[in-house]
Amino acid sequence: MAKLLLNLRNVPEDEADEVRALMREQRVQVYETRPSNWGISAGGIWLSDDADYPRAKAAMDAYQAQRGAIARAQRQEELAAGTAETFGALLRRRPVFVIVTLIGMLIVASLVLLPFVLLRG
Image 1 (cartoon, rainbow, N blue to C red):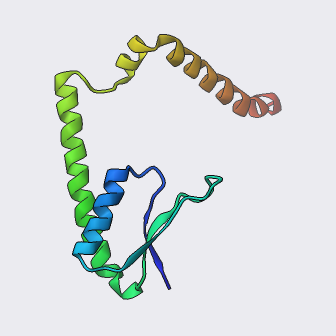
Image 2: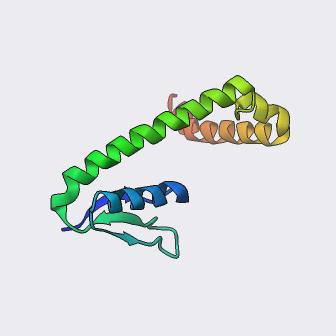
């Protein structure tokens, strides 16, 4: 039975390409399903043979650890350079958007809590 190796929802194209190349290097047979037209399924990279799973999983774990370390290093560089996307930077750049979003969040939270407040009694 096929085993899902990587769900492609919110996966950047470069990462998916690197995973495909990694599986070719490891000589692991994979196939890919495409996202559905309605957005219900995001598609994925699947193993053709379950016996390859331990080897593929080990390679994926090493790859994701490396990619995570690179992403954390880039984030630290951006923070040090002052170019990182922060709440304060977003508030200065798009104040109306931030305020409207916060008000919307408060309205939703109020509507969720309203029955509990009314039934408290």
